[in-house]
Image (tube, rainbow, N blue to C red; front, side, top):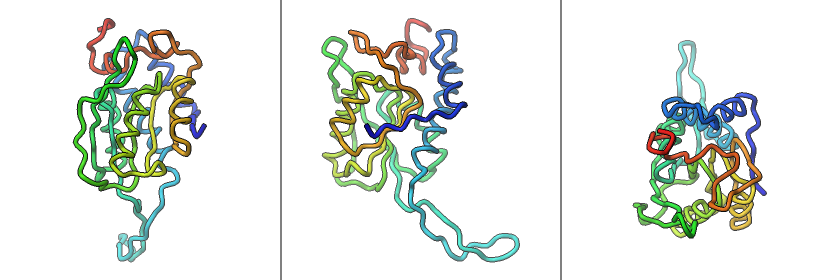
Length: 213
């Protein structure tokens, strides 16, 4: 699998706090932002640079550097909203393309309800923001939308706070060459499609709408 596990001590400590049932919604949102920033830094490690000549420091003129490709973000609604701001902090000029997908509770199949992509791609590298990859169905469907839009698989990178091994395997097998960055991988997926031990429903915990509210 082309799955990159970010094993930095800060990431693992923050992920443990994120999992805890005792973590408040306010703190959960803060941790998602912090982990998303760390994921974004790791996932952008290989981005190509371009020269920016004619810049001036207080001392003299110099040639600087800038990110070469035009960057896009596709947060999967609604939980992907929590990852959007920290990645925008890294790429302030990025375009944002929301994808509305939810997992039907009985069949566990993804259902698309919203997307408003331009007629043709306007970015060269796109980060798909999906906090949890459980069954992998939603991520597979989202990537299919982006490929149909006209992106190449090499232009898409998936950022996920946590994934199940079965779900990550499904996504990686569906799209060879896709790069996925995650903070943690859990081996078990329950019969109702929940990651075990997981962290619960990320959308509910982000927005304080679930049974733990």
